[in-house]
Image (cartoon, rainbow, N blue to C red; front, side):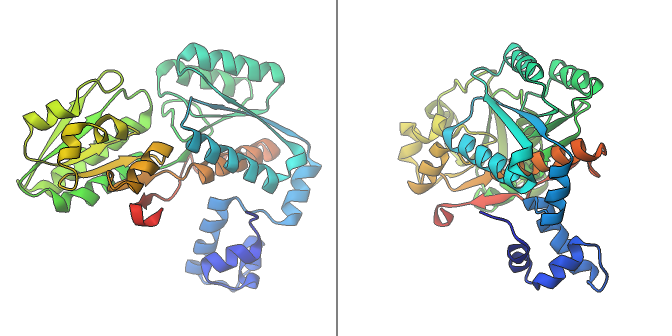
Length: 336
């Protein structure tokens, strides 16, 4: 998809001339209209031909991208976003080296970072665990003049240039709002596995907080945790909680319970919501086993991360905001 001024105009319901005035900082545009156009421009990484020419004149950006092992659908969307941004910024002058790691261990990340440094990258885009060790590594890179943009998953206490992704706590609150109307008089099970990625903890925090606000004594929420892959059978949970009305999964845990015979016997009576649009999640939506999926829109996240990093490398100036949140998307079977 090619992002043009006319396409931006159509998304915003304005004329092509209005978009040109906003892009070039000219007057005679209502503040609300200007903000709406600027929001779409930021989200889709639109640049004018003159801006792209200026970027090309300033040299090549070598950008490394490190991703944890991902579902094939997620990986494809992220790579599409990277290619989209490279075209927008001037593909001939932006070299993207993408490495998808086989392990999420620190060693795997650090070795991959070393390989990127050997290639002479100007900057890095990473989706990494939110740990002290990872934060220290990002600080080391920043100290050596290699800026890092966190994409899809944040490393909050690091010196990263920017985080591009979903507002995770807000996403958890959205999940609570989706299922709360259906659970009066029952129990909600909130399933949580390892939380090495900051987003999982933030989602759960937002979910539990909003459910407490909405409960008013009408339902009960039970948090069920596991140190690793979810290892407690859904059948056992449902036997212990016969009044379960909903199941919340803050990450791609759908297959853990949605294939369980105990769940299948009660399908249609239990509302389910999870985060992430993997191939498995899509199948569960299609089969009616999953009610809601809350998507981060990884394509736009990846594209925006490249644009931010390229601009910072070209100008030497940091982005105006340390966090850029993409719009939350709620997907149901009917929206596939």
